[in-house]
Image 1 (cartoon, rainbow, N blue to C red):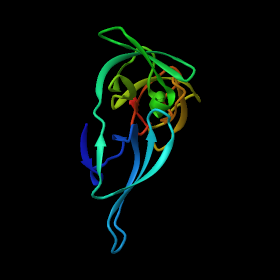
Image 2 (image 1 turned 135 degrees about the vertical axis):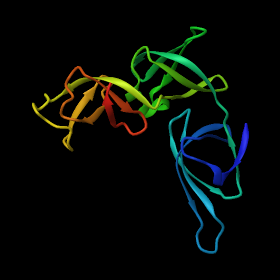
Image 3 (image 1 turned 45 degrees about the vertical axis):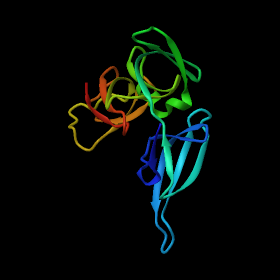
Image 4 (image 1 turned 180 degrees about the vertical axis):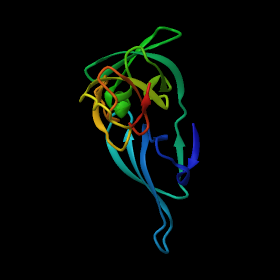
Length: 187
């Protein structure tokens, strides 16, 4: 465990408060007039999934959780559980849907994903910057359409809906940015 000053907190960091792990979702640095500065943060408890607001004084020290990462293969989803297999030991684990969050829109069976562990507990996944997903459903392309500012919705194999250019058809594979959830190009 390493300690950092509250003013050095950043979005998506994992911190430990008491016995619980929290992921920083949002934070704002405030210095009201003649008072001391503080950091207002929105945190998600990694184990229970509950949201909370926490105010840190600027001089507060916060314990940053150190994580181990392992390469794992995504196997399947069973209700609210995502099942993964370690690519070296073949050990299988499952992660709750709330720990994965929006990243669930970008993983397909057999994908190799980096899973973050705190001690022996899986606490989340790291996605590559882009993923290639198959278009399951979209309205047919318009003949002679140019790649102007026109877009149409397309439902991808994971259920994610993105705006794509008119020349993309059902069955095409598209590259999607995992940070913004936006269409990048045809794959």
